[in-house]
Amino acid sequence: MSPASIERLAIRTPHRSGNAASTCSFRFRFSTAVKSASAQAAETYNQAFNLLTEKAVNVRSEARDAFRVYRSTYDIAGHYQREVLPLRKIISDEMQLRFGSMQVDVFALLTEARQRIAALRAAIEAKRDFWLAQSELQTAINGGGRGESQPETRSSTTAQASGGGH
Figure (cartoon, rainbow, N blue to C red):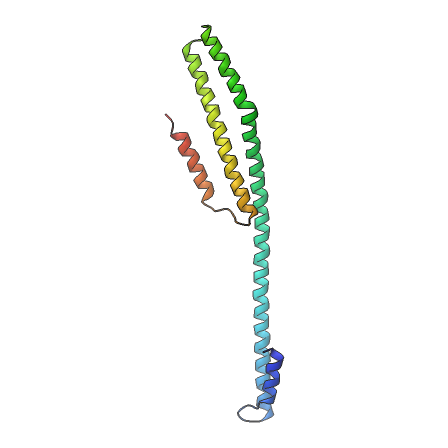
């Protein structure tokens, strides 16, 4: 029932005392209650609208941040794949040739092998960071949001990977 139809019903139905004054006072109290309920509904609507607007702004901001991280990790991983690893391969081949011709000792060859392995490990970590950034970007685009514990998990994984070697 609409408030107008309820008011009409209140006007037609006399109150217990049956006089017009009690019917008017009921109508006034009822219209005040309807106005207050309407104001409360409008307030609830405005709060929900503001909350939705805030959420939309936050999601867009998270998506921009996630894209920046995605793009930078993509560039870093690409740099390792295009430049660092091929150069390390050339250096390794040269060191093996020099070792074969007895121009360098075994310790220099071992040092170079360690450096090559460190570069390969860094390339793998860069690729892992890229895949993590890609999943975070996809989550942000889908309207998810970042969990607060996610960066902690990522840094603890990096710490475990770094500290796990001898």
